[in-house]
Image 1 (cartoon, rainbow, N blue to C red):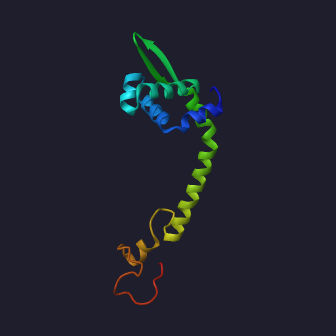
Image 2 (cartoon, rainbow, N blue to C red):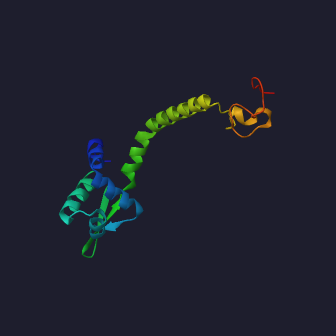
Image 3 (tube, helix red, strand yellow):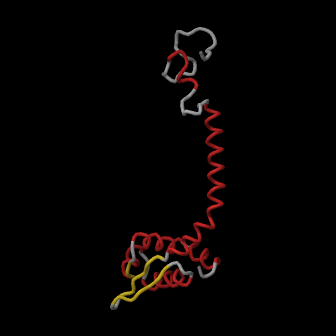
Length: 138
Protein backbone atom coordinates (compact mmCIF):
# COMPACT_ATOMS: atom_id res chain seq x y z
CA UNK A 1 0.00 0.00 0.00
CA UNK A 2 1.39 3.38 -0.86
CA UNK A 3 0.56 5.49 2.18
CA UNK A 4 -2.14 4.88 4.77
CA UNK A 5 -3.20 8.53 4.74
CA UNK A 6 -3.57 8.63 0.96
CA UNK A 7 -5.55 5.38 1.03
CA UNK A 8 -8.01 6.71 3.62
CA UNK A 9 -8.17 10.04 1.84
CA UNK A 10 -8.91 8.32 -1.46
CA UNK A 11 -11.75 6.33 0.08
CA UNK A 12 -13.19 9.35 1.89
CA UNK A 13 -14.86 10.63 -1.28
CA UNK A 14 -18.23 9.06 -2.17
CA UNK A 15 -17.54 9.20 -5.93
CA UNK A 16 -14.28 7.31 -5.50
CA UNK A 17 -16.02 4.72 -3.30
CA UNK A 18 -18.62 4.32 -6.07
CA UNK A 19 -15.82 3.76 -8.59
CA UNK A 20 -14.21 1.16 -6.31
CA UNK A 21 -17.59 -0.60 -6.02
CA UNK A 22 -17.93 -0.65 -9.81
CA UNK A 23 -14.45 -2.07 -10.23
CA UNK A 24 -15.20 -4.73 -7.64
CA UNK A 25 -17.52 -6.31 -10.22
CA UNK A 26 -14.93 -6.31 -13.05
CA UNK A 27 -12.33 -4.15 -14.78
CA UNK A 28 -13.88 -1.31 -16.78
CA UNK A 29 -12.81 1.21 -19.40
CA UNK A 30 -12.99 4.88 -18.42
CA UNK A 31 -16.06 5.44 -20.61
CA UNK A 32 -18.09 2.87 -18.67
CA UNK A 33 -17.03 4.39 -15.37
CA UNK A 34 -18.02 7.86 -16.59
CA UNK A 35 -21.43 6.59 -17.68
CA UNK A 36 -22.09 4.56 -14.53
CA UNK A 37 -21.07 7.36 -12.14
CA UNK A 38 -22.77 10.18 -14.02
CA UNK A 39 -19.69 12.38 -13.75
CA UNK A 40 -17.88 14.26 -16.48
CA UNK A 41 -14.91 12.53 -18.10
CA UNK A 42 -12.39 15.02 -16.63
CA UNK A 43 -13.86 14.64 -13.13
CA UNK A 44 -13.84 10.84 -13.40
CA UNK A 45 -10.24 10.92 -14.60
CA UNK A 46 -9.24 13.01 -11.57
CA UNK A 47 -10.91 10.52 -9.24
CA UNK A 48 -9.21 7.61 -11.01
CA UNK A 49 -5.85 9.36 -10.66
CA UNK A 50 -6.34 9.69 -6.90
CA UNK A 51 -7.31 6.02 -6.66
CA UNK A 52 -4.31 5.01 -8.79
CA UNK A 53 -1.89 7.09 -6.71
CA UNK A 54 -3.29 5.52 -3.53
CA UNK A 55 -2.63 2.10 -5.03
CA UNK A 56 -6.28 1.07 -5.12
CA UNK A 57 -6.56 0.68 -8.89
CA UNK A 58 -4.34 -0.34 -11.77
CA UNK A 59 -4.67 0.82 -15.34
CA UNK A 60 -3.75 -0.94 -18.58
CA UNK A 61 -3.86 0.33 -22.12
CA UNK A 62 -6.00 -1.62 -24.61
CA UNK A 63 -5.62 0.01 -28.02
CA UNK A 64 -7.14 3.48 -27.52
CA UNK A 65 -8.87 2.61 -24.24
CA UNK A 66 -7.63 2.75 -20.67
CA UNK A 67 -9.06 -0.08 -18.59
CA UNK A 68 -9.07 0.22 -14.81
CA UNK A 69 -9.08 -2.70 -12.38
CA UNK A 70 -9.19 -2.89 -8.62
CA UNK A 71 -5.92 -3.82 -6.93
CA UNK A 72 -6.90 -6.18 -4.09
CA UNK A 73 -3.69 -5.77 -2.06
CA UNK A 74 -4.57 -2.43 -0.37
CA UNK A 75 -8.10 -3.66 0.33
CA UNK A 76 -6.65 -6.79 1.99
CA UNK A 77 -4.37 -4.58 4.10
CA UNK A 78 -7.39 -2.51 5.14
CA UNK A 79 -9.21 -5.70 6.06
CA UNK A 80 -6.30 -6.79 8.27
CA UNK A 81 -6.21 -3.36 9.90
CA UNK A 82 -9.98 -3.43 10.52
CA UNK A 83 -10.04 -6.98 11.98
CA UNK A 84 -9.61 -5.97 15.66
CA UNK A 85 -12.35 -3.35 15.29
CA UNK A 86 -14.63 -5.90 13.67
CA UNK A 87 -14.04 -8.21 16.67
CA UNK A 88 -14.85 -5.34 19.03
CA UNK A 89 -18.11 -4.65 17.21
CA UNK A 90 -19.00 -8.35 17.10
CA UNK A 91 -18.45 -8.67 20.86
CA UNK A 92 -20.52 -5.55 21.47
CA UNK A 93 -23.32 -6.75 19.22
CA UNK A 94 -23.26 -10.22 20.82
CA UNK A 95 -23.51 -8.64 24.27
CA UNK A 96 -26.41 -6.47 23.09
CA UNK A 97 -28.14 -9.53 21.67
CA UNK A 98 -27.77 -11.38 24.98
CA UNK A 99 -29.14 -8.39 26.90
CA UNK A 100 -32.11 -8.14 24.56
CA UNK A 101 -32.74 -11.88 24.91
CA UNK A 102 -32.66 -11.57 28.69
CA UNK A 103 -34.98 -8.58 28.63
CA UNK A 104 -37.49 -10.38 26.42
CA UNK A 105 -37.32 -13.60 28.45
CA UNK A 106 -35.87 -15.74 25.69
CA UNK A 107 -34.02 -18.90 26.67
CA UNK A 108 -30.72 -20.12 25.26
CA UNK A 109 -32.52 -22.27 22.64
CA UNK A 110 -34.26 -19.18 21.25
CA UNK A 111 -37.70 -19.92 22.69
CA UNK A 112 -39.46 -17.70 25.14
CA UNK A 113 -40.27 -18.82 28.67
CA UNK A 114 -43.87 -18.00 27.81
CA UNK A 115 -43.96 -20.47 24.91
CA UNK A 116 -43.77 -23.56 27.13
CA UNK A 117 -46.08 -22.78 30.03
CA UNK A 118 -48.90 -25.31 30.55
CA UNK A 119 -48.61 -26.42 26.93
CA UNK A 120 -49.77 -23.01 25.76
CA UNK A 121 -47.87 -21.88 22.70
CA UNK A 122 -49.98 -18.82 21.97
CA UNK A 123 -47.27 -16.56 23.32
CA UNK A 124 -49.74 -14.90 25.71
CA UNK A 125 -47.65 -13.91 28.76
CA UNK A 126 -50.66 -14.38 31.02
CA UNK A 127 -51.09 -18.01 29.99
CA UNK A 128 -54.43 -19.59 29.01
CA UNK A 129 -57.45 -17.34 29.48
CA UNK A 130 -59.09 -19.73 31.98
CA UNK A 131 -55.97 -20.12 34.14
CA UNK A 132 -56.27 -18.80 37.68
CA UNK A 133 -53.39 -17.79 39.89
CA UNK A 134 -49.69 -17.33 39.20
CA UNK A 135 -48.11 -19.11 36.29
CA UNK A 136 -45.27 -21.46 37.20
CA UNK A 137 -43.03 -23.67 35.15
CA UNK A 138 -43.32 -27.45 35.67
